[in-house]
Image 1 (tube, rainbow, N blue to C red):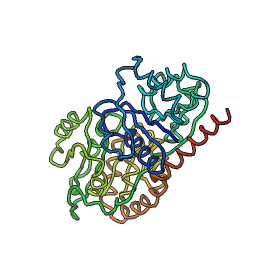
Image 2: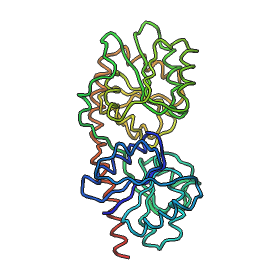
Image 3: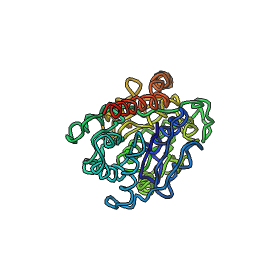
Image 4: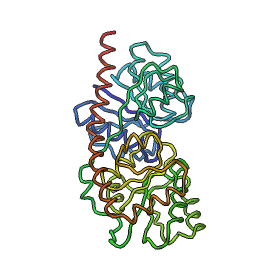
Length: 351
């Protein structure tokens, strides 16, 4: 198949991760794959050599240049799979002016609770979780068809990855690797950590960059815990498992997720995972997670304190995490996506 993956993003997050894994996996299986990115996109550096890369303007939500390219792509490629708002909107304009059969080749990935207005012209959506599919069904009545394809992870070498920060048997290390933005709950995690009793030797490690990084550094200082918090900065994709292997406990106090890559990475690293009871996290972690009511900082603090004190409990949930992680492999994600693509191509062949 001839396949385009298009994404307007310059940083690195869950959606970018999925695009790289899909493109590399599809190319490995012999498909002709081209990834459309805007200038300066970091993810192009992570694509295999047999994946083509095309730099696309993605100037704004209404410019015609990218739309014309999408019109041409819908006539030539078997599948055009777009990711995130601007690619969704500009490809949607293209769908209006192409024939019915070509229009069916356009698929949109929904990674989070994105604003419906950017997806008003999208008819067929691949959702990264059942929770997101429910959101689409309830908020986007114009969508004709949905599929659920869970995110997946290549866990090869996860348990053998050398820790970025050497382990200390006398110290319990809690951490989170996520883009610094409000929905990820860094502020709640810092406040919960500050409420843990001083008799427990703990350290908090926060990896990633983003718009709330500097405010979170200030918050750590204001809470009087700056000397117990390590801000690791940007973690390259090849060092993600090394980050998680530096920890004893992963904490995911996210207030909104599509299908958390951080949860999958933490499970594959054999970590005890404490998380808010956000529905997508429940879907990802299943019974392998320890859950706290969303926004309940006091309960988050007491739960973290409990797992920090109880080594057998951490070992139990570590085993459960590893077993759960086997459900969400990169190969499974690519194969399930291919099933969707084949269904669409067959529909087109039947007219």
